[in-house]
Each structure stands twice: as structure tokens, then as C-alpha cells.
Image 1 (tube, rainbow, N blue to C red):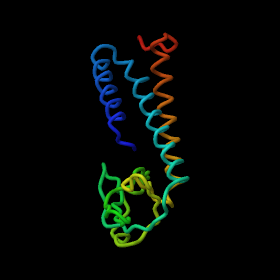
Image 2 (image 1 turned 180 degrees about the horizontal axis):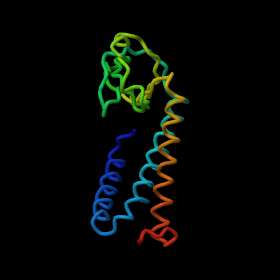
Image 3 (image 1 turned 120 degrees about the vertical axis):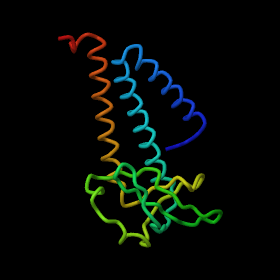
Length: 162
């Protein structure tokens, strides 16, 4: 979401610690990964709340789709008073059906967006708000499971020895 230098530094530190524990004690990676997932969910949730409160409603046009492991993310083009923006939304949740659908008929259609007045390249599709929350809740729950399993093994509540 927010790609500030501070966030990038935290992500680099997390990556280094994660790689270290991959070789030292692998089970520590579970709570680390779960914590990272929850951190990103909270970050995106706060962004959604911010953009819904302060975002500027606007209309964009779908110009193409990017493929990400089979899922399709729309590339939206729109104009602000200062610049032309053409990129994917800040947060986009896809379903398994998106792998099989043909989206060519949507190219050229207009969509409603909300963009950040301070940073217009950060925007969301208005009609995808509910599915974004569903996706965030799902990732949050997976993160919690990773933390519980990892801590359960580390604290001896879950026995992995045969």
C-alpha cells in the first residue's frame, strides 16, 4: 500500500530476519509470516478507511488488464488536475472465477474510483469495497492461523515429533 521509505526499510528487515530463521529454526517463520500478513492487512485496512473518508471520487477508464498468476487486475487511466495516471488500483481482490473470465469486453468502460488527494496514484475501485474487506479478513485469518501454529509448536503445545 504505502510505499514510503520507512515501510520499505521494515520490509527489508523482515525479509532478512525471515531468511535467517529459514536456516536457523524454520518454525519461527510461521509466526513471522503471520505477523507480516496481519501488519499488511492493518495497513491496507487503514488505507481503505482513509480513502473512503478523504478520497476524491473520480471516473477512470479500464485500458487493459495485468495478469498476476492467472488473475486479472485492471489497469485504470484517469486524469487529475496535475497529472495523467495509468496503473492498477492500490488494492484489488480477485476470485477464482477471474482466472477463466474474458475481460476484453470491459476494456474502454468507465469505472468509479476514489483517489488519495495527496498521492493520486493511490486509488481504489469504488464498487470493489466489499470484496476488498472480504479479502483482507481472509488474509488476516490465515495470518492468525500461522501465528497460532508457530507459537504452538515453539511453546510445546503442538508436538511435531513422530
